[in-house]
Image (cartoon, rainbow, N blue to C red; front, side):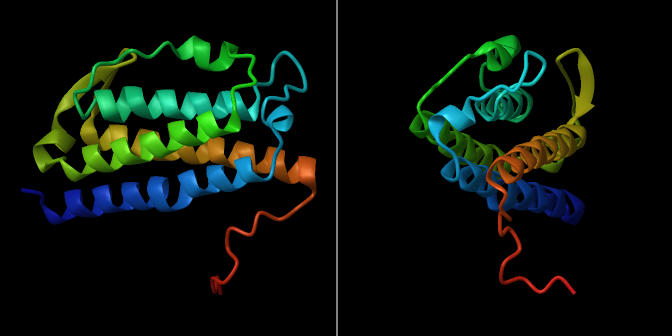
Length: 166
């Protein structure tokens, strides 16, 4: 059974990842060619494709494995080393699978899961800390992807079209 704060945190995590961030990544991928997705301006900058792989790996390690109990097979450096191009459809499928797995884990969380401490990547983290981490980390990189698409295409992404922000 969840208490109200646990329920609110899980609901907000779902919203930020499933209704905001992952759809934004899909929208960004839709605007680019495969070559643009895998473009690296220099050796110290990863591609949008690498960032998508990194986000999938991070959430799998921290949430799907860390909280959900799935085996952790992450090879973090490979996310950045992948030269691509992987087909855009493959990146989209990875995001779709991630979305399904996120929802399944979040649906099964209890208040006890959120207060229990685990060690992930050498960090001791409660379930609450894990949810905050994956949400802010995902949002950070979606922002990077958005800036890259906007600068390459000279366009507004329209994330807030139809919303009254006043």
